[in-house]
Image (cartoon, rainbow, N blue to C red; front, side, top):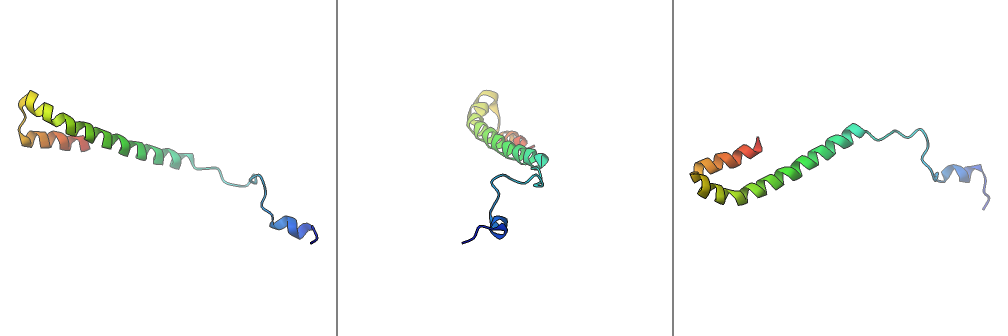
Length: 75
């Protein structure tokens, strides 16, 4: 099999060409921020569910007040 110019054109380059577009750092930042927000929201809700029992006893909250307090975490 001859190694000519036609064979060189079909091979993949080892390094990317300088014409490839840069990664969109704004999109990367937004997706990272969105995923971190979701992780922190889940952490806060899990922490709040454990603290509800103690807050109900210590502060003397009713069930409705505990529901409002838990729902305000979503804001």
